[in-house]
Length: 205
Image (cartoon, rainbow, N blue to C red; front, side):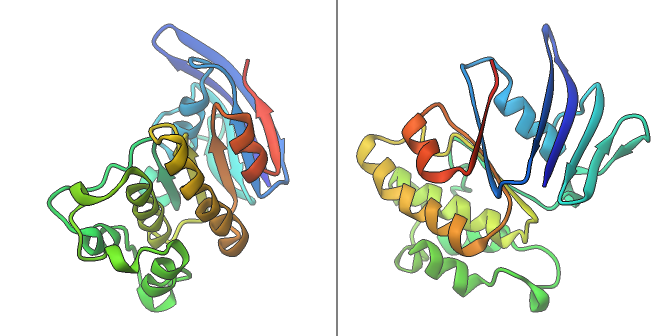
C-alpha cells in the first residue's frame, strides 16, 4: 500500500501530490516538469516535502505534522536512475558488491540469485565502460536489489536507450516485477512501456 500526500517546493516549482494505491507496481506519468522525479526523490529522502505524509506498506517515512523524517540511508529504498551511475573504477562485480548492505546472512536478495535473475553472470569481470546501455542498467538494477530494499524506485530507466536496447531490458524489468515481488514506483514518458510493466497508473498534469 502506497499512501502519499505531500506538498513540494523546489525553487519556483510548487505542487501538492496525493496518491493512494494498493498496486504492487505504480507508474507515474506526465509531461516534463510535472514533478515526477521530485516525487521519487521525496520518497527516497533526497528532497524534503514542505508538509504532508509518506507511507509505504505501513511504514511512515515522512510526516511533517509529527516531525518524522526517516534519513535516506534508513528508508530501505533502491533507486534506479535514468543513467546507470556505475562506478567507472570498479568492474561489474565491484559495482554489485558496493550495493550490499547489512547482514548478508539474512539477506532477502543474494548475490548469485540477483546475478542469475538479471542474466549478468558473463559481465562480472567487465569494466563499466565496456557495457552497453541495457547491460549497464541491468547492473544498476542488481546493485539496487543487493541493497536489500523494501521499495524500488525507477526514474525513466529506459529513456537513454535506443529501441533495440529498450526491448532487451523490458523483459528483465518484468522478471524483477514478477519474481522479486517488491513494491515498485515507475516513472516513464512511454505509454507502451508503462502498460507492459505497471499495475496502476497515475498522471501528474
